[in-house]
Length: 306
Image 1: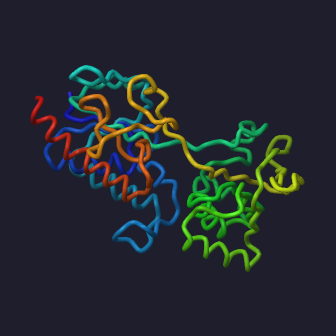
Image 2 (image 1 turned 180 degrees about the vertical axis):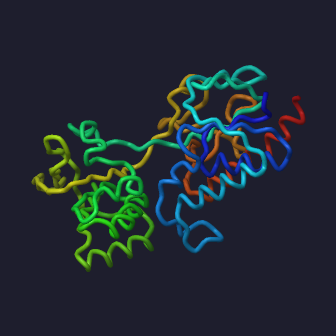
Image 3 (image 1 turned 45 degrees about the horizontal axis):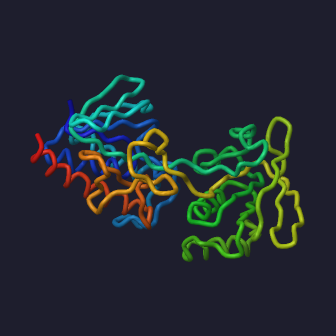
């Protein structure tokens, strides 16, 4: 049995493990794919203190290596179910059931889809939700990016060194992402590398065996425009991965876990950190802060209850 099971290996989970391991607590990290979460799928990161610029995969590797050097144990598997109500918590995975005195949920969030016909058909055949994962498949080709926030901006900057041209499609007339990054996109616009298509939504995905074009509708005048592209990158936000927790934890109307300032949920010994938690700002630095706060409170919780 472990002191802490952490479900999710992004910056929040890795920071929590580092703080707990330094306090001589036993920690098991359960991660579905690879350590790093969304950070590992991000290109250049320029807003994390201490690094003027660092590749997301490199930052994730540094965090994971630090935790591993302190004795972190890791299981790479999907979680099938939770038993969180008892004093001893249980997490069931494909690799078996694990027990701990406390559980930290660092589940992150998954990409939202457009819900357009043929979207699922063309996943991996032109439609992608991760530019840094799939961008190299579209070298010297024309692509579209959908979104108006920082993720879409970062996708465009990453793709600009790979593809021929980018169409950035946003449903509103103004972007909501970081102004500093947007200025970089304006420079790309002057070079005819990117075209902004505002007040518009994607209405159709066309193609036989792969994506060949998209149809974009202008919301103001209801006109349609067909754009020939080989790739479509969807960056319209994410939703929390809390499907297994609907009837167990207090969630907000969007499915994010509600916690107090110490990351406690409504169940004793269960904490939530990072993007899965209800909060105003979801950044690497705030995820790390969540992880540190949760571990410090857990250390006190274990001392009082075990």
